[in-house]
Length: 143
Image (cartoon, rainbow, N blue to C red):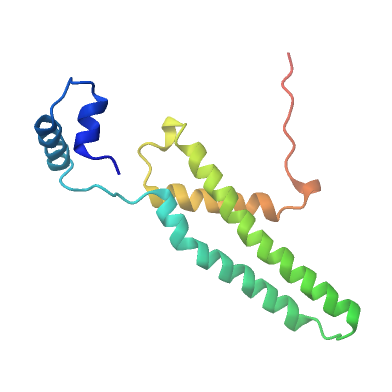
């Protein structure tokens, strides 16, 4: 946290403390005290437990469908569970990255934060759940 005294000293005498206080109040009033609007990251944080639960449901369905209880199958189930947990974390991380990228594109300026978050989650899930051989290949442009 930067104090008003520190801000005044950083301005090298260009602004006094009372001027800084008045300007802060003016900015806050013009924002109508909406200092922490919802962002796509907030919606992603809300959706993250749902993503993890969805992946966990997939694990339980897979565990119930296997009837064998030999050691190799148990080992496979543990490894499969670790992959699924990793998938949830990967989907969330890729979603964060896609949300960060959306800031750089003017297309997303008028989109609601929840829509940006939902699109990022959907794209991340689709990208990470496709096997590598089925991912669309980028076509080269002909010159």
